[in-house]
Length: 344
View 1 (cartoon, rainbow, N blue to C red):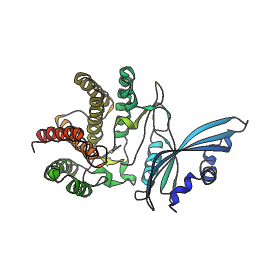
View 2 (view 1 turned 120 degrees about the horizontal axis):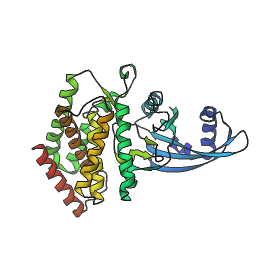
View 3 (view 1 turned 90 degrees about the horizontal axis):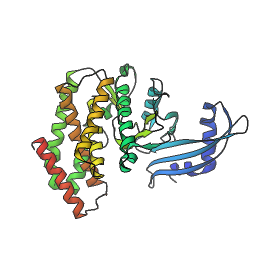
View 4 (view 1 turned 90 degrees about the vertical axis):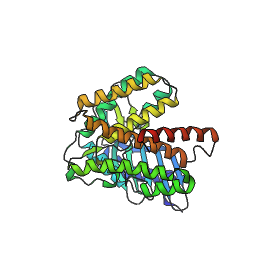
């Protein structure tokens, strides 16, 4: 039996949380019950990639009950210990509360290869984009920019053991070799373009990173679905699977491209999209230690185009399009636009 299935056994999950989580909440005397909600459930014979929410009922000293969202994110081939260590690092470096925060790290299970953390309540930025709620969008984006500036301003990275593979385009999961293999097998007509584009992205990144010893801690997957509005004043960012020391411009280029892509899908006016992108950059550089120089603009653009190709890759190989001709026409148009932008 695939042992990740144990977490779906309520008795096993209750015993695990009583042993590992309850001692971290001194205001509670017991755990009464929990409800298991699968948010991501890919389970095969011996491998898995899951995100489970354990809606856990804690009981305080006076008998009062509080429900806390405890999450388990586990992957058989990519143990989430690095995520747990990253959350701990950030929790100790100013993200443990206040108005810019993260999920609270709880523990890592080597047996399940999963990280357990307390979730953050609220809707993500993409939700408000889909609702066309411009008032909320325009309140979230400046906060998000401040959150990333705060992250990039952290020092002392050389004393911490981060996953360095996530810090380079060449090696970030799934890796360039895997991408080229998938594209070569399923869309061989794009192989030459992919090789040329990736060589361009990687050479530009490596030229900069090889020219300096300075690194910034980046989130690595900065997009609207990972930005959570907890309240009018409080914002959290989630999903630290790709966090690593690298070039801060990567988070900026990634966010700008993903915001643009998602708002275009929702038929926002181009002028409004550009307004929000400018708002993000203006607020970021108002709080960041770096300045928006021509070199920084060039690096942001490089990551913007790389993220655009990652979006295309996801559409091609995730099964989303399922060879639907109308969707393929849209993807071919995206590829041609990127080719022109990169002069390939």
